[in-house]
Length: 208
Image (cartoon, rainbow, N blue to C red; front, top):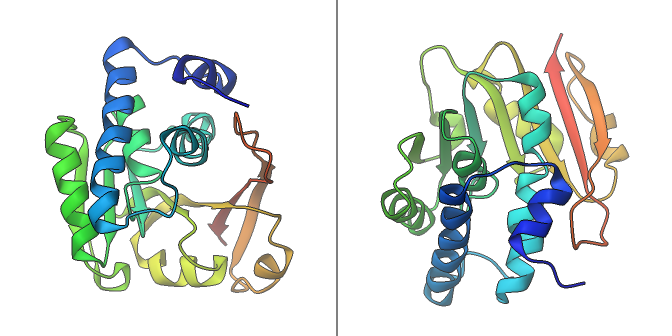
């Protein structure tokens, strides 16, 4: 099924202004360009990037909107997913991207500059070694690690009352069973991503 940006945003229930829509398309163009040299993603076709990367990342936005976090950390951001699309459609929300691979954060820094994303910060390093006063109200990941590894690696960065948001494919029963005893699943939601037939789930977790 072929979709354009307008149709996909409407299906996700997201209202994005003209500037934001142009930045989303410019981000895809940058990702496609840099991917030829830096191999940021296995997905090559622009149409597939639109659905499998952009729409998939933006499926998180309505759930973050409900929580209205003060700030967001995207762990293992890679090519900037889901952090850059979220930063584009929510320009008042501070978003930090962290990745241990310098060539990936070089792309993220370039994207921040070219897209003029004043609410975006880029960090090169391991999340386990990263520290920031006050922490983050929402810590998100997309294809980063198992749920247990995700929360263990980044828990020191979670602000009081904050939540983890992990984007997964099939429902991760085994991973949920392996979570630390003091971490609970607050919500588990099936995500509907325009143009994608594959299963997608959002697992929201919090500490006890």
